[in-house]
Every structure is written in C-alpha cells, then in structure tokens.
Amino acid sequence: MLSTVIILILTTAVTLTLAQYRRRHAERLAPMRGQLVTGRGGATIHVETYGPSRAQPLILIHGMSGSTYDMTHSLLPEIENEFRVYVIDRPGFGHSPMLEHGEDLISQARAIREAVFALDSRKPIVLGHSYGGAVALAMALDAPESLAALVLLSSPSQHWDAAPEMLYRLLTTPVIGPIAAWLIAAYVPNSYIHAQVKDVFAPQPMPDGYIKTYQPLIALRPSTFLLNARQRLALKAQLTDMALRYPTIGLPVESLHGTADLTVPHLIHAIPLDTQMQVNHLVELGGIGHMPHHCALEDVENAIHRAASRAALNS
Image (cartoon, rainbow, N blue to C red; front, side, top):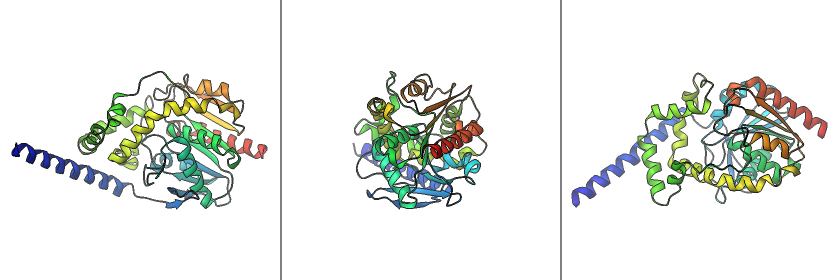
C-alpha cells in the first residue's frame, strides 16, 4: 500500500513538473508582445497594436486553441500598413487572463470590445476566424452601434447534428477532466501535436515556420485546454439562440468560407448564414480548407477592403 502511494506521489510530481516546464518553454518562445488592457467592465485583455494610428481600426480575433501568433503569422504583414490593427488574445488564451465571470460568446465579445475601446474609441471592423467569428457575431448582436463591419473567416454560425468529440466530453467530466488535461500537457508527443495542427490546414500545407512561431503547447496549458473544451461544448446552444437574431444585424458583413473546410463545413454554416442576413456578402473559396487567413490571403485582404468601403458608405 505504501509503495503504491509513493509511486502515485512521484508520478504526480513528475507530471506537474513536465507540464510546467513545457508551458514555460513555449511561453519563452512566444512571449507577450503587446500590453494588458483593462476595459470599462474590469476585464483584462492582451492587445497587440500595429499600423498607422489614424487608419481604420481593425480587430483580429483568433479561433479555438489560438492566440495572437496565429493572426499575425501570415495576415498581419499584408494589412498592417493600411489599417490600425488590434490583435487580441481571447480571455484565457495566449497572454490574456481568464474572465472572472462568464466564458460565453457575449462575455468574451464585451471584454474584447471594451479593452480595444480603451485604446481607440472609433468604430472598428471586426475580423474573426473560426470560433473567433462566432465572437464577432456576438459582438455585432450585443453592440452593433459600436462597430463598423464584420469579416467572418470559416465561422461557425448554426446548430449542427454531430455529437461532441469524445476528448471534449472527457475534459469536461469532473475530476477526470483536470487529470486528463495535466497528463496531456505533460506527455502528449510534439509529433502528435504537430500532426494535429497540420490537419487543421488540410488540404493546404501548413506555412513554413508556423509551428515554431505559434507554439501550440501554450494552448495545452491545463487551464486553457479545459476552457477550450467547455467553450466547444457550449458553442452549439449559443449559436442556436444567436441564429434567431442574425436577420437583425445591419452592419456590412463579409464572409469567406472554404468549400474544403472539414472543421466548420461551409454547407452547414456559411450557406445558411448567407440566407439569414441580407447584409452578408459570401465568398466561397473553392478547394480551401479551414485556414484562409494563411492559405487565401488575397481573398481575405480583398474582403477586409470591401468591408471598409461598405462601412464608409454606411456611415
């Protein structure tokens, strides 16, 4: 009995040490580049600022398991000379602390909007990728008068029938979930992580240097990993409620969605959204997967410019 307890203690100590070491190593390679900004509501968000101060403000919101490093790797160099770009870490991801109250789309949208508005009170264009697109939609539903336009990339927007993935169900199970999160953070091989990231880009190749820049181990911090699972399981019900209000959105909206996107299928999400919003302009990207802000840069850049032009006409 005593030997079993000793083995359990040693295993726990090794697991905690390895997980913390991998986290610190990833954070050293992907340090905070912006500033922590506290908005009017008290939430603090990590915000990176780029581009001319008087240019049209543009907020970039990453997707699940993401960070500012995903949004800046390919897209930022294409737009930073033309827009005042605010790249954020969603609450609990990257270098943003978790919200004290609420993890839902509206809570995230308010925290992000208020943090950016503490730096720049002008109406921004909001670009969201994947889950970040759902946050952008929530922002438009919550405070449409404060925004200029939306750009949605591979965004989920509708209810879908598939059951939640087993991993997310495991991670949201009391006691078992936190134990699994620490074990994954400590022992999952780098080769497996890299393969999973490559799958997100399919059928396009992952850009050179992406893994080194992005440092996916940051998303495997137990607190972040568990938050990601909770948000993924809660997403479907939130989108079901939000979809009833999409016809009320009056902002200019530009949507881009790859026809080869297996993560957020365009037939389930992009096509119905286009029928729900008269203000939406949908571009279907033939053969493109889930990452158009890396694999269809010209199309994304054109969508941002169209959003800016439509917002100027709409003002």
